[in-house]
Length: 88
Image (cartoon, rainbow, N blue to C red; front, side, top):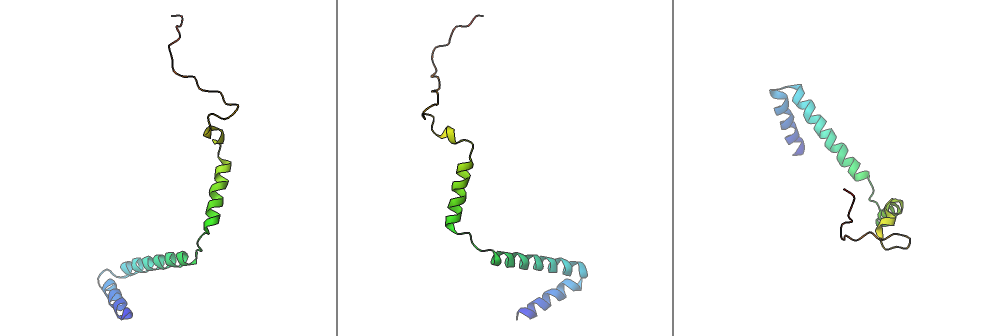
């Protein structure tokens, strides 16, 4: 059944426009087949590896001191208040 449909499809493609349409259809079929094969060969990443990668990225982050503004050694930001008169 599948071969009959494929043969009819190829006959339709080769009937009017010739070889160009058949080449495009064949290239599309090969691309879909290659994508399906690649997807089936890729193994899923175990969840513990994902967690480890996220943890490693957190350790490399340059903004770690910014997480706790009240940590020891950090100066407190100035609160907004009255404007200091300046020499004008």
